[in-house]
Image 1 (cartoon, rainbow, N blue to C red):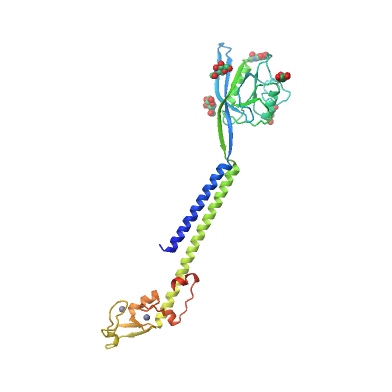
Image 2: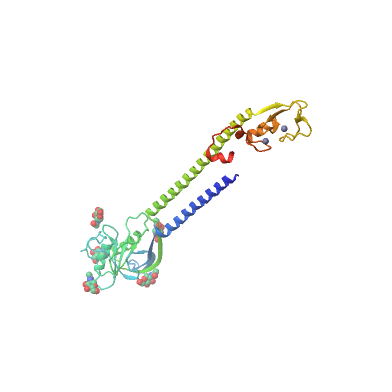
Length: 333
Ligand SMILES: *[C@@H]1O[C@H](CO)[C@@H](O)[C@H](O)[C@H]1NC(C)=O
Ligand SMILES: *[C@@H]1O[C@H](CO)[C@@H](O)[C@H](O)[C@H]1NC(C)=O
Ligand SMILES: *[C@@H]1O[C@H](CO)[C@@H](O)[C@H](O)[C@H]1NC(C)=O
Ligand SMILES: *[C@@H]1O[C@H](CO)[C@@H](O)[C@H](O)[C@H]1NC(C)=O
Ligand SMILES: *[C@@H]1O[C@H](CO)[C@@H](O)[C@H](O)[C@H]1NC(C)=O
Ligand SMILES: [Zn+2]
Ligand SMILES: [Zn+2]
């Protein structure tokens, strides 16, 4: 490998390393800044009721609930109560709607269906009637066991959780059979969910594509440059070859005869083949007066354009000008 291309290879390696590390740092930064984090808590939901058929107490505890975003994360307990307004309206969207709170002054928990108004409205309506907790059951989610972290800022000190639809329906069916259900809500596990927002994904993709384009453009530019360079060198080489042929044709040729001084033993040998001259050898005489076998020196001149003995340039000596591309002039001449 020529030293020039070695340098170029090193440079391209350095640049691609730089680009890669840039991408890496870029992604790392995004990971820490743009990604959003959300903290949420699960809730244990314990329901206790007396089975009317067998008069047995039944109790059931699952970690199916999820605390609302603005709910105090504390335990709550009470008798489960539905909105009383209409038999099938479990939404508690009407500010004047009442809950079927039992007469005794016991703590109670409101059970409300999701939908038609905001969580905040539902929770405020129940809190206004002194509910100790509000349980909203999910409705119509793609995965039946799903819950979400409800936003409900400004609802105060009332505990609010969401439970999945099957659990809500289960309690609802008990209440509709006039069974008293006591619910205990306790704090479950803390969860940290990391979201990568859509804008950050778009940002990462765009910057990645831009970097790809930059490096690709650079690569293309590099190879075009190399190609042009090689092309120019070939052209210069050809021109020099043509000029050398022309020069050679102008040089004097002679055939050695018997008794010429060149045939004498103390005369210099041909510097190319290191042999002496014999009668009938055809020799070429260069402008510097050095002579060689024609068959020996012609290929040499075609390649080097200089006398093998004294390095004199035959193109210069004969005044043959060659127009070369600047870049290559220094190297080939
Ligand atoms: C549910 O709570 C009741 C009291 O409110 C308790 O007696 C019962 O053991 C609890 N059930 C579970 C499974 O923890
Ligand atoms: C809830 O809203 C839907 C459409 O928005 C409506 O059809 C339905 O009657 C509403 N339910 C109640 C109980 O108001
Ligand atoms: C809620 O409790 C307060 C005092 O604790 C009482 O004055 C108010 O009447 C209660 N509201 C209802 C709807 O029971
Ligand atoms: C929902 O949860 C119940 C029990 O918690 C489970 O039996 C059921 O398979 C779950 N359904 C889905 C769709 O995950
Ligand atoms: C539940 O009790 C109410 C009165 O408090 C009564 O009108 C209703 O029929 C009862 N429902 C069942 C299923 O027993
Ligand atoms: Zn020779
Ligand atoms: Zn010479």
